[in-house]
Length: 91
Image 1 (tube, rainbow, N blue to C red):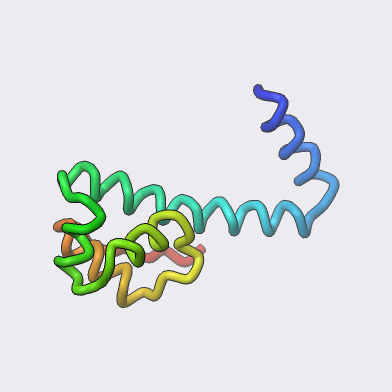
Image 2 (cartoon, one colour):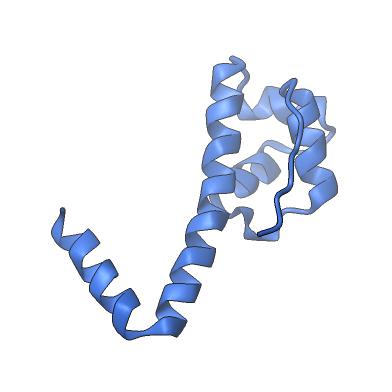
């Protein structure tokens, strides 16, 4: 295990607030990462995807890099433009 992973695991064990915030941040990061991967698999540029959902390239970049503020309706538009569906799981 890397030094960073060791540090994160130790810090999460000691600090429940850190653990909670870390987990939330990771989930938000994952959304943007998955959207970027799916866009790239589809062979679309950010600009091409933006045109499909009637937004700007910078908006697509923000979604991919800072998806914590993404609206469900926007997520659904992006998924549809990529030929995908959105599935939500409450745990």
